[in-house]
Length: 280
Image 1 (cartoon, rainbow, N blue to C red):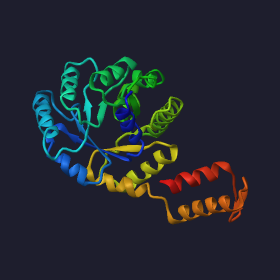
Image 2: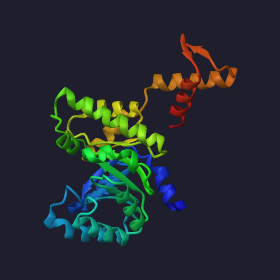
Image 3: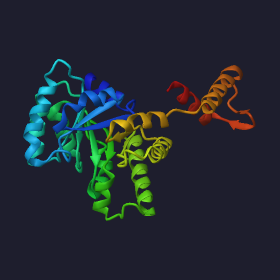
Image 4: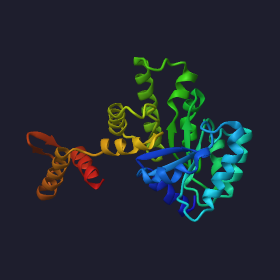
């Protein structure tokens, strides 16, 4: 991959909030960026009815060519579908895109085809049992930057009953598989799925703390009001920051590999975690 693509991929892990905008409402793109979202995804797939896709592509092209354009990501339709090829042609006409989300990714060849045809980084959305089964293979795809997943689609395909204790078990298993595979194949950390109830700030904050503690990089958002909640939930407490600062200062002062802070044993992993926290 060329340096431009590599630079785009390297910035992905810094994006914490990814906000969806339906391609039928291009006027909302400006508002989406104004919300403080790190990245905006214009959706040409599920958010657009089949009869509206042509006009949505036209509106998207006009936005890209406008003076006020800001780089966006596009979620395109499933590889091999009639709409997929139309989406690819559109992407080829818009060289200033940030990248592509490939819906319902299932094969390494599909990811590489998108990258080769658009010269853009690809984020693969895992939304089926087959896609989840194939993640280790897809992780080798040239042009792949990261994984995300559509949990409700996965639940439907796996026949998981949403809203039950089983839901959380399956969701965490999916997160674990994506995190491990991404790490082994040196991809950006995966992006967590949407939180559907955009009025539930407490539940959203709890979800953010879960995936961030697990090592995921960011989250898909479906409403501008979710952006601030996610960002706030990711902020470390003053106590956590103070402890990290004391750890680093003591290590730099003493040079010891193992020591205590307030009775808590500190060793290499704690020192490294403290450095990472302060660097953020």
